[in-house]
Length: 244
Image (cartoon, rainbow, N blue to C red; front, side, top):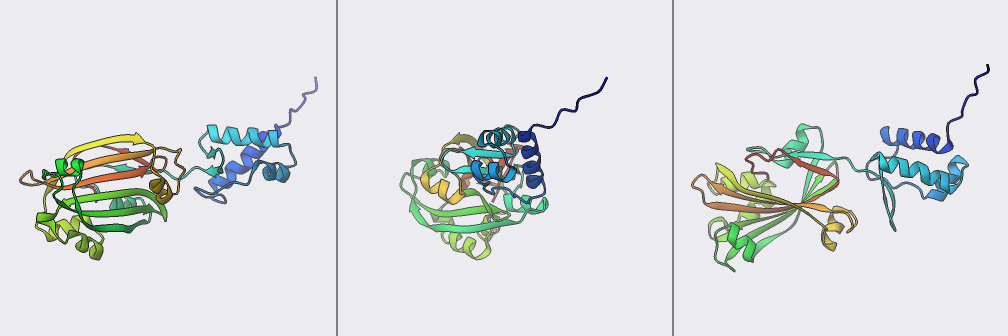
């Protein structure tokens, strides 16, 4: 009896080609794919067939389809392992990812209620603010807003501007040993500014992490509110940590 060979469906062929282009970084993380009609024309198929291939790639996690914006290759996911002395930039370097930072703003501010509470300050007391955009392989992955009691750390923002390290800046003020005394994570939708800085739509969630760090005497020295791009960073290992 003759065996009849069943040809591969056209959408499977398209899926395989696009998957190979993603794997070989012809289409890199975050790259925008052509619209359905151009993909259909490329492979000589209908838009419905192209759409089926894209839907399969999205189900497998290779791409994301954002209504009104287009179709994008899924971003690389960077693990952020919280440990006793974990620091995101150092961790990225350890996995051969190029870290980067951009200072968004700094100065002395009146501590709002949440900041005052975490730093054991009177409401409205002076706090030093340092706001930073963190990147991995030139892709924005986090926005970190750091606060320090101004009475003790006046000028720490200028120190950070010079050395780019909160750990080193704290050492300049005599804080060599520190420990995390509170950590809280929530998922939420980003503000318009956060979405712009992280280069993501406002419809995609972010992870917000609050860290309160104390010195060896138990006095709060640092309150950090970090907003992570939810599909680019995975926070794991919530052990004692003081990232920066």
